[in-house]
Image 1 (cartoon, helix red, strand yellow):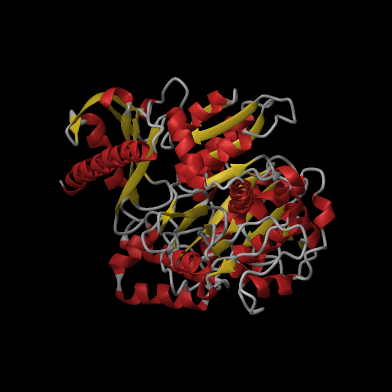
Image 2 (cartoon, rainbow, N blue to C red):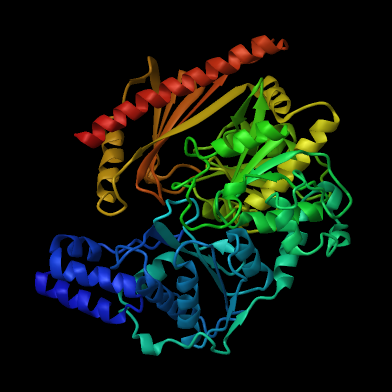
Length: 603
């Protein structure tokens, strides 16, 4: 694009932009910064199975109202290719800056194309939107959220009929339509009060609460007995945030499950719905980190509100220690992910996603098979190989997928006669049962609370159960590291070059251990489609390293797993020594691989 063409395109964008802040920003770039102007218009934020996500700002390489309108125009055109979409589109948003504007713009664009829109009460957790698409039999769902990204970001997530994430080939079709869609004229949008835009009533949230409470063994078939018993929502939130002055408040349902919990929504939108779900299921309400309890788009105590990031959960762990909690729980800002921490010999330890996933699998598979159907558990290629051993022990089936929940749900759809018990990925995402067609941190938190309560009645903890799994199946340790890039634009090529260099010249050893096999997933495998990932096996396949670029953030991710034999380790000190050995192997492999990749990216 020539300088004249760039200025012409920027002028069209400026004319279509209804936001005074991004209009002023773009005008400054036109007047003073041609280099940055070029970066803002080449390339645009990529659209894929997770929709779009990135820093907010002016131009197609940033999240803004013009881009939202363009993407939604493409969505409307794709929906109309199949005729008028039955069920319309559900639109929801989180509490980030501009989320409400983006959601309303999406609704107005859809309505201008004659498509019915139902808008969730705002702000809402992402799992509620995914559930609503399925429950209301909508044609699609739009969720405005940047999940756990930095506070400067926002995003636009798309669900298709059935409440599952967008998948091929529809994602590619919408992306191609976006490429050929000009910024819509502001005058072409339907008004905000268009009769085709209607609010979703509270009955959808009630149905979601019924569904997630119904995931618990004791609640199946009796969930509706708790409906309405939890009192008004404002009173529940006051109890959650400690404003009632009673610390750990009692659930209003009167059927308390004895678990003392500490909790944080990390300034996100999870606290309201999670509190109502706990009360409905008969749990005591948790102690909540007071200065993280309410939605705040500035994320003042956690500018990078990802529960996996070091230090993000420090406030939660202090609260858990101060209140003598049995377990500490954290949602990311849109409540689709869950972090779990437990007391461990005088300190608090955050469980890995693999540890939580495998504990949930053991808990859920230990229940009687009420449905009589074959049971299925699923995790990803970068997740722990402990899961298939647990599944085999319980005579359940296991499937492995690529990273990303769209693949987990695709694997589930390929086994229609099975009952999905659990799908999980190591990045703190869990789908418990089939209430929601995506990861759901709220449903997973209820299942964890149920497991903790059951173990507590036996004088046991989550770590006791984890030790039991290791004695039975071998001590499995996993970990990950990331190599972060400066910005989401201009880095895709660099990340691709780094993984290409690794597959061209893989190491022969890592951390003193021979690399015994290399699996390049660029061409797929027997049971996995092609992916930009490389797997290195070591110690005769008792350890492995996986390297791949992130699909949602500008970083290369490195995963490691080590398995050590635990035969004859009935003594706790012996087991702890074997577990420590596995963790040391993982740490050494991560350090060696990170150094290797850092050298590649800097060359």
